[in-house]
Image 1 (cartoon, rainbow over the protein chains, first blue to last red):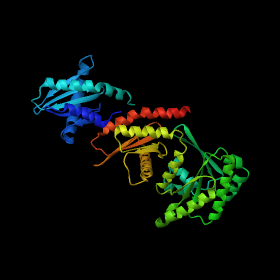
Image 2 (spheres, each protein chain N blue to C red):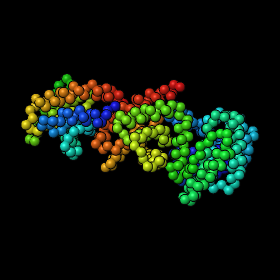
Image 3 (spheres, rainbow over the protein chains, first blue to last red):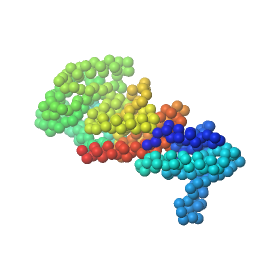
Image 4 (cartoon, chains in turn red, brown):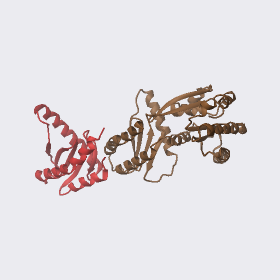
Length: 127
Length: 295
């Protein structure tokens, strides 16, 4: 099981230095936990992120033989979006435009390292 | 047991056969004893004996079928009609019953339901019920009884039956421990476990105090009605979520025989995480139920 507060605390640690929001979504795209300025903002990010991810995944699965997309960076006018998966969930970071892509990647890698094991443990028990 | 027209079959139908209160008007008098087996929590079979209350049958139970009726009794549920004119006779039968119980199955638990409380004026309900209670306690010695005021029109019926059922579940303490544990991990205010078919409260755990002591029974009642109306549209009730500005409530299937209700007052916690937690907890509670099966 997941402790909602604990997971939020982990996400909070990554939400610094120009990162606006950090979200953890389930495979359907609903937020499990997030840190963002407002609820509304977070929900919009969640909807866009999961949509982008699934579209890309569908597209690449038919083109390549391997396991599809692992990491996705979308540079937008008002910021950068970094997407990746951890266990069966999706991790999404939204940063201001001046934040470098490498630092975003490093942050998301660190989160994945930290969350992978506990989340996999939980997900294997989901019936 | 109880005298004729007290409402034994009515309450049985409501709790176990999905009747709504006004449907019970269609029920006729019970002839002799109606046995029904109700599977409760899957492997616990409740053997309900609904004994017709006409005098002729009553005499019969005490005389010829005494050993059949009264041996191996786990629970005696005696229903009193609060409007009854002949209290003396009720008491007489009741005491006969207790005597027989003492003789054949002395470990049985005794529940007295003072039924049809809706017919008494609201202000005097407590007074009348307490009076009856005293008298019953006095007359039941040396046996210990639990008395409840009930009515098929409100949640009191569920309250009484929940406590009857509660006393029959063997590993209820373990169940409660697990529930408390679950509530703590998901940071829930309150977790309530319901039986799947009857929607009786099996167990609950609360982290905050609440003013309404009858809330579970009310919920049982509402959800059951809702479930029934779902089935009218050929839809199966499976789960539901209610979100209000200051709390969120989740109903979901837990094990194959139970439903769970989780109340969260922290609205910053997302629904998806609670739903996931419920589905993770399924295995944890399934284990317990399997343990019950093997016993």
